[in-house]
Image 1 (cartoon, helix red, strand yellow):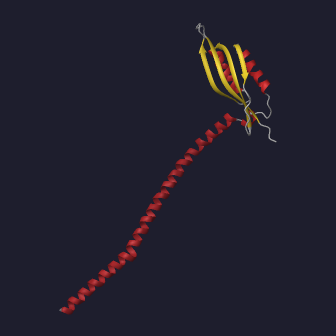
Image 2 (cartoon, rainbow, N blue to C red):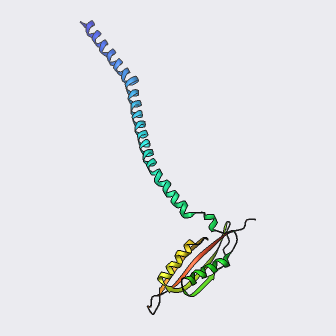
Length: 179
């Protein structure tokens, strides 16, 4: 009887060792690998979903790019290579005359030199109806030369007769000569 109990105990111990070996060397490593594979699969699914969402945005971004390219046009062409400043100020004066603006004054500032682009600040003053002044600004936007409006001040006439005085500070650019 003692031999039989010992034999059963040995079988139980061997079975326990087999179960422990099975758990330690096969089940737990396999379980960790499966968990890592599931995480990788989830990450891959997220990346695929993000790629699909991004690919749906691509036509919209392409359309925006085309719109921006159309707006910018040939940016370099709007910055001339030489300082044709006097002629450009004459064109601004012509636009003011065309819009029947009075008390015109266009005063260039001191030239600012930089590596690639030089610029000349310009102060413009005139008086007219608000519609005429806005038309002048629209025409300035359509000019073939880059001009940046930095400040605009509009003052109502003291007589309240519909006249507005305009003060504008702008910057006109041209390319610096290299060499």
